[in-house]
Length: 464
Image (cartoon, rainbow, N blue to C red; front, side, top):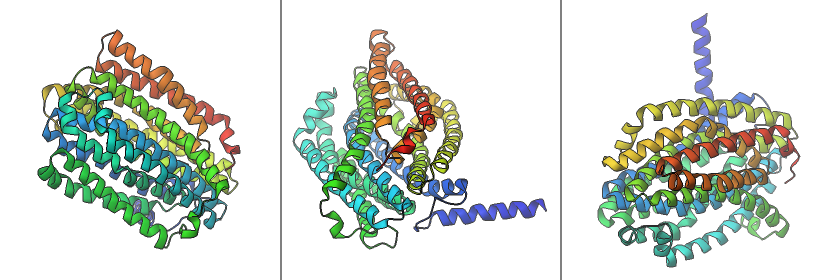
């Protein structure tokens, strides 16, 4: 009897797994919440895993070129974090709007909201491309890069920033699909992009050196975007955009702009704090920056699946609020937070015990490994807070309330974390360790604040 029950459970899990990987729209406003989280989370986790693979693949191959090359990637990534912030902001704004319209059973309104979001992304991308084309060397200099780093890294930085449109579109279009519940298409686009990047990266680095890594990443993402665009215009999902959806609608553009701007500021504040952390660490030399960069890439590799799981909460909140079911939306968030906390606890133990093993897979330089191991062990101690905080932040964003997490991030990351990190690292002479401690404490406080404000429930009344 017991064996029969276990077989049925295994069959059910396998059935759900196969169903979750189908690129079909699912109605997440009814039925089991646990099943809804599972159906959304699996493709979203796999999607985010693929995004984190981009970072690890690049630093794995670039790390072989030396500490200056790895430092270039780390400093460039700090500026790209601004691009990621804009992309995440637009993506979150589009996802919230699309999810709300889908919950209201208004697919045409969802498609139009997605198209207007794309219009905004084109404008922003052009500005970033111009900055990267003409001022890459100056940007590296501002970050404290040595003359050697600037000499070998300027072309890498120029290619990455000039080609930012593929980053922007990859995130934004995936946000549209996630809001509609079509998470599998988002997953497949990043799988395709990563396969291309993995193949191209060692080949192009061999022929072009460090700039080859930027070429591979940009081309890989561009191929993923082509896949997305095809399904956005010709696919069979609930969202199908037509050219007439791109006709500027000032009322809708204003609504999208309002959500996207605060969401962008939210991620920009967070990302800019990472730039400040890199700047403080750069005073300890290229080896310290390289070790920090490797550690952050590894941390992000495991943070991305947790971010994927938290994205499920955003979609569930948006669709259920659209369906006038705020209590179901809240239950979805708490259950998702529980699952994310369990996952992040496991990852934290893994990094605390095996930090040196992971760092040495990428770089074996003694000083680089020393900083990388220290970063992994200290920062991962706060992973359970990272996991719960992600869910809370995405719950606010999914409801269209991007202002609340923006103010939370602004206070704890700028008012508290940056001065505190400087105090520990420079004034108290703790060096990189002081920065890592400040990161953990700040993120923990972000999570505590987010939980308190989420419980107040004002997010349930947001209209978009």
